[in-house]
Image (cartoon, rainbow, N blue to C red; front, side):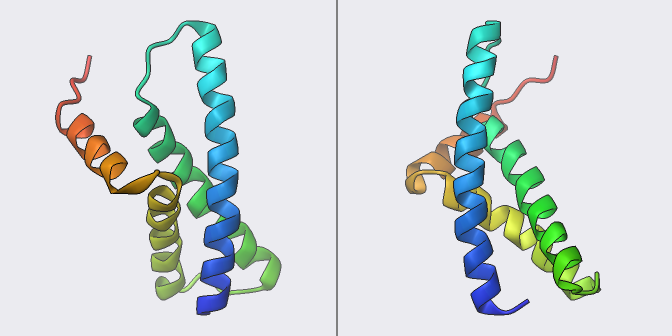
Length: 103
């Protein structure tokens, strides 16, 4: 994966994650479900980051080699960080994950 492709995908996928996150948050609010917005962004970022990169690989004929698969994972992390607004949000997310209690 080239740097230009990585940056282009990062911008496009971060915008997509922001739009999808707002739709999911609206749906959850209407359903009366309690949720953590940061966890929602994380889950959507993983799905969109890995899935979007996989689709680009498929359409561009890029093989699924171990380095390219690592780039897919790194894209998910980059999209998540790009979707979060500032460093404070990342710290808040890590604190919420630390205090998360499984039911």
